[in-house]
Length: 267
Ligand code: ATP
Image 1 (spheres, protein in one colour):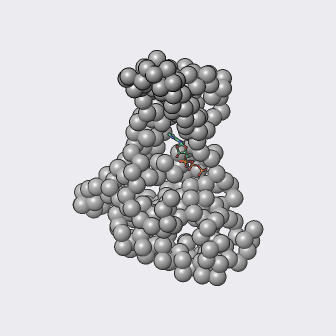
Image 2: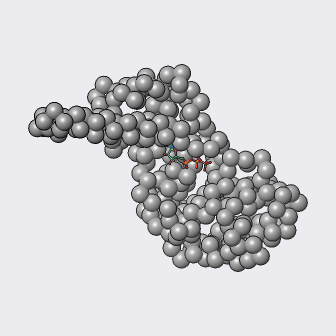
Image 3: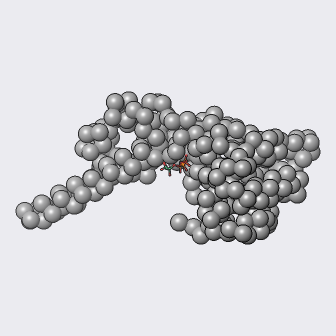
């Protein structure tokens, strides 16, 4: 994956995200259109939140949405992993935070994404001690400077919002909280559909039925992605097997075009 802090426009499209329509609409209103039509918002004096916190169980699309928002807006994306920032720059973490925000301003329009942001914003006096405290103070200073960073939007992600210092959740900081839930059965169907978008799926594979099956209960998007990958791999192997069989029999006249039916059905 990319070097940390490197900025580029991600290639995740909204079509790659299954479900989460409400969040998409919110991000369209609060980020995408503001990046695309900054003058209109300025003309009308619209002053909206620029910091968002996505929270919810792991593997349900927080990182994916953030990337899709950047893609849709044509904005750069900077991916910061909370724990890495904390560990890599012990003693220099304030400077690191300043540098990150400065880089974000330079490559605006930009989405600055803080993954596992709870690591940076643990309630003061807990776990990390003074390192976290100094880092947190610097982060608050930067977050409060929203006026100076046109076109920069901050998205944080966490599985543990409850351990976060309330100070960062105020308006103007990570002011807008958005819950990213475990998918329900319909949403699982949409996720499977999104995940199979660029795969040669057999026409008789019923993703909706699979999503409804008991085996898929409680699966996250990440689990479904792993499942889809297993199925794709099994289909590739089946294809090789058939080609081998055909060549052993000397009947390799037309190449076998495999879908990915069996394993996916066997879920
Ligand atoms: P974590 O809290 O562990 O960082 P996350 O919520 O950020 O998790 P993602 O990294 O966005 O989760 O998801 C992991 C992978 O799972 C994605 O790359 C994608 O393949 C799949 N996935 C998760 N949610 C969805 C979804 N809603 N639609 C399509 N794929 C999804």
